[in-house]
Image 1: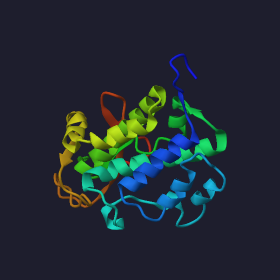
Image 2: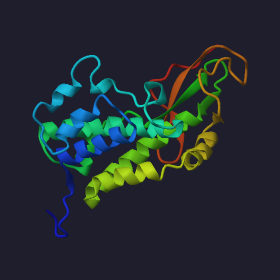
Image 3: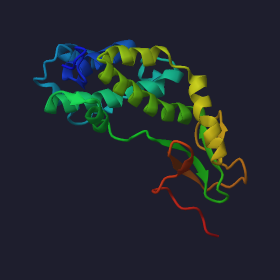
Length: 226
């Protein structure tokens, strides 16, 4: 305990409780009972939910899977699911975690902006869904850190969920993307043909964010040289 009586760590119980809340919030029927059993902090048998095909690792929260969720919340819900699941697993193995260690257990999946690139002319494009997924990574990380350091983890997660503003999230990063030479489109699906040159050699592309600009990630397909 610190001098103010609040823990600066997260326990398995905290993480399982928040995961259970998320599953209830989206109407997940299959896995909610597992997390209900463990939301009291009992870790016995917990890690078995992660094993094999069809395990908890394979869960995707979306309307197509009959979850009670709108399209704007899907990126946030799945980023929360991935992060909370990772923290549950880590705390079930290692006990209470600091905010830094909890975030480290979540990995870096989601910290790049995903979109499309034309390998013929270099035209890059991202969609609203791409922007929302990218914003979700940073918002979830902030909510996790704030919730652990404030001693109100579930409250921090619930507050993030309630205050989601999709338009604001897009507007936070769209000007930076466009300044970095990445176009924005409301369309969904494959970018083919290229809106700029009409070519069909388009590919999934990723950009890293340094806090100021987006730059191509190191593991993308190369542009055509001729």
